[in-house]
Picture 1 (tube, one colour):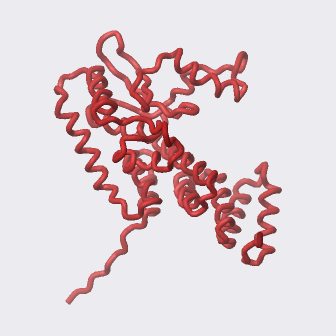
Picture 2 (cartoon, rainbow, N blue to C red):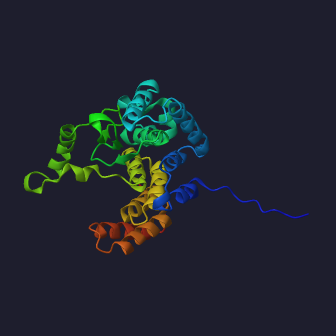
Length: 294
């Protein structure tokens, strides 16, 4: 009788790695869902994708085949924000669950980027070309529509579906410009801040939101899970490698910490924090793998 080798199922990290391997084919919604596996290893991503397809399909069946894009956009906004009730979670904005699409789908509450990922998915399933915009401080969505005097590019706030005027966008951008010295002779045109965000950039922003939450709470195990994904997603993002090394150290995993921090310095010999990281490495090596006493 022939024997068959049983293959181990992919780990959550290997699954995420496979999804983001090729820039040209990253499935944004699926990869964003896979981020939530860091908090729920049993999450069935394909089942959640089916739930999203069912909701989007309900809307698609209502839209005539010859409906112009502007009409599709209006129906999408009514369905997404009014009928389904998606909105910003203003009462608990920094809850990590706001970055996990399955929870956002279940509670209908999220933050701009998680709501935007779902909105873009729904838009694509009804024939609209929607893309994310990594606007400073507030993720946005832009669409190109045809139909009537509003034909052209529309910028949407994914927290409420409102179309944003140029004046409103300039006002939203002003604090960022002031803080970065982009006023007067150093001003930059609004269009530079409205470029389409590639899927990899969207996922990195989602993960960095989680990174800041977990780091501020000193939740080292969850921070480590986020950094594993950032290191995979951004192979040239050596600062993420450095931060993972520092997180390993907080968890008492000194060998892994030394490995990551050494790799960071090898890749960035001119790093501005080289002296500080060198000192941290010396401390870790001197500890001989023993936890620090406090």
